[in-house]
Length: 111
Image (cartoon, rainbow, N blue to C red; front, side, top):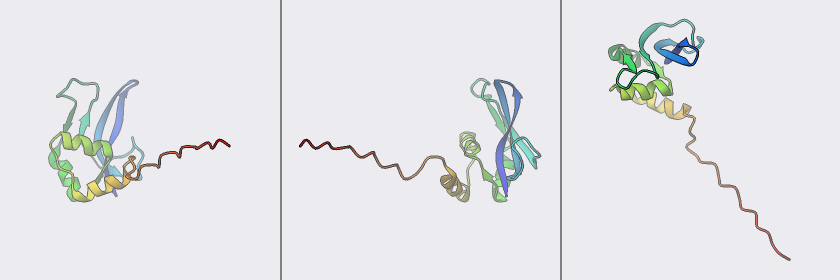
């Protein structure tokens, strides 16, 4: 399956990322099918990312699944995420839909 995810590059403590279409079995910084843009979290506001939205939408039409971070940034950049990808993100999300039960309060009975 093809996924859209970031490939890290840059200096130590100064990361930059490239948005890539890649096979999900490939390592994070391994071979890519196509580079679609970049993201620089240390850049000033308004110049932090540049994505080729036509190519991103092309890969979505082919069934590519975005990572959670890629999906959030594509939304901020003005792109749309397909319904199938949104559903898959909800399943893969780290936030559980079912909250953990509150710990039971220990009741001490005085005798």
